[in-house]
Length: 512
Image 1 (cartoon, rainbow, N blue to C red):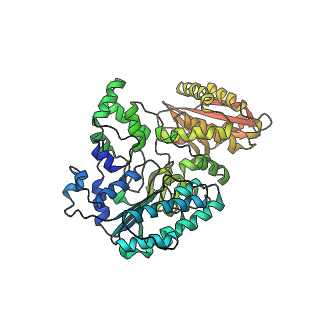
Image 2: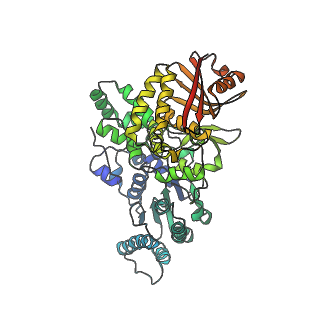
Image 3: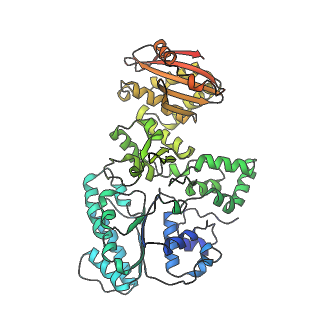
C-alpha cells in the first residue's frame, strides 16, 4: 500500500517520497490553459488548497519528472519554467498589524534574494511591484489569503487594519497584470470588504464553477480507485465488506457540494485519518472547533433549525462581511453547511449539513451554549433517548428530556417556546434521527417532526399552557395527514413547558 500523506501538503514531497496522490493534474492543465489568468478559489480548511498550490508551483517551475504517469503528462507538450512567488499565510503572527507586515516583509526579502533583485527604498507594496516587473511572466500563488481576517474575526478594529494592508498588497496583482502569467488566490471565505474583488476585475472566482467542483477534495470514483487497498485493509480489520466500509465513509465524510451540479465530494482530511487509524471518527471537526461561528449564531439570533434547513438566494453564497452580516455565506464557505439542492426557477439553494461528522460535531459544540453540559455528561442522555425512540417509547424519551432540562443552570434558560424547542431539536439531531422543526403542512406548521425505525413522532409544544391543548391543535389541523400512507406507526405528542419550573411539566401521548 502507498503511504498516506498525513500532514504532508507539498506536491513535490508526495511524489518524491512515494506517498498516495489523488491525481488532480487535469484541473491544473485546464486552469492554466483556459480563459483568463487570475483566479480565486474558496474551499474549507484542510481540503487540499495547499496541495493544489504546490502542484501548480511544481508545474510552473517545469519539474516535469514529478508528473510522470499523471494526467497532465499526456496533455502538456511545453514545460516552460516561470518565476513563482508563493505566498503562504497559513503560519504567522496575526495578533497585530505589525505581525502581518512582518510576514509580507519576510516573503519579499526572500524573493529579492532568490531572484537577485536589488530592494527599492520604498514600501512593501512598491517592492512587490518591483519584483514582478523585473521578472516578467511571473506566477503568483497565495495560500489562505484570508487567514489574518479569520483569526481577527471578533476584533473589528484589527480587521480594519488588516483589510487596508491586504488591499495594498493584493492590488499589486492588478497593477502588474501585464507581467503576470498566472495567479491563484485561495482561502476559506470571500470577504467583500477587503475590496480586492472590486479592484481586481480580472480575478475570476471559480469557487462555484461546475468545471472546478472537484478540484479539491475526493470524489467517489477517486476514493474507490486510489484508496482500494486501504479500503480492503479496513474491511479486513473490521471483519466487514469493502462496500460496508464505503457506506460508512460516505455517511461520515461525503456530501460536500460546492456547485449546483451537486458533485459529491468527500472530506480528504478525514478520509486520510480514518484509513490511517482504521477507524471512523470526527477528525476534521475535532481539528478545529468553530467557536467564532457558534458565537456568531448567538449574536445573529439565528434559529438553529434555520441553520440546517434554510433556502438562500444564489448571491448569498458569494461575498461575506468581516462582522458576520452574511452568516449563511460564512457557514457555507467554512464547510459547516453545504448545498443540498438547487431550484432553477427561483435561483435558490437549499442548504444543510454535509455529513454525519459535521452535524454531530456541530450539535455537540452547541450543547454547552444551551445547557452548559460537556460531551461526556450528554452521552448518557443520548444513549438512553436513542433506545427509547427506537423502541417506540415516547414516554421514556420525554422523561429523559425532563431530566436533561432539570440540570440546565437557570440563568441559561430563556422563557420562550423557541428556546425549549431548540434544545429538544438539538438533542434529537444529535440522536441521528430525521428531524425537522416547523414542518409545513396545508393546515399549519408542526413544531417538530421526527422519524426513525418505522416510527413517526409529531410534537406540538406549548409554554404555560397544557399538553391536552397541544394534542387538540394536532387533531384540529390534521397534522398526521401527510404521513398517513408512509407505513410508519405515528405518535402525537403534546408537550407543555412551565416557565416557573423551567422544565417540561406535562405531556400527552396519543397513538394515531
